[in-house]
Amino acid sequence: MTPEQINLVHDSFRKVTPISEDIADLFYGRLFDLEPQLRPLFAEDMGGQKKKFMQMLELVMKCLNAPGRFLPAVVALGQRHSGYGVTPAHYTCVGEALMWALHQGLGEAFTEDVQMAWVAAYGTLADVMIGAGSEQA
Ligand code: HEM
Image (tube, rainbow, N blue to C red; front, top):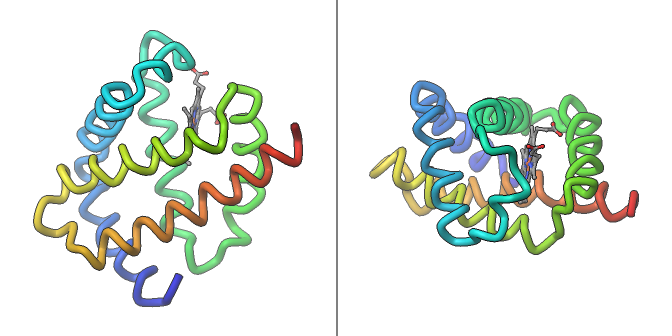
């Protein structure tokens, strides 16, 4: 990621924070519309999951300048995900649903450049998780 892209993600995350619950609702709604077979992997009540996902996303997105601060947590997260039955292909579905949710939530602020920056940031996160999950398997 370029420093400009990191700035774009940081700036747009400031707009995500106040509507974090809406983004999570949009994201999981879209994910289960696109991939209904993923729904049974999660608990019936998604309240806690939505919060945990958004908190982890915030930790990573805010520390893109200093990956050492999130790497251990993200490696452990990737290992747990392989135990949940998550496969590399699932990361693509989650990325698509997340980009859609950000687009809906941020509207015009989600410009093409911002989207490219988010795709790069999500790719960094997913790559670490996938790598950690496959090493464990
Ligand atoms: C790439 C970004 C992702 C992030 C930041 C993320 C974050 C989280 C967090 C924080 C948890 C809470 C439990 C824990 O910490 O282990 C969790 C659980 C879970 N995630 Fe993810 N996740 C990501 C990707 C995915 C993908 C691609 C899937 C595939 C469907 C997935 C499916 C699950 C499932 C099934 C659980 C357990 C739910 C439960 O026990 O009820 N996650 N995720």
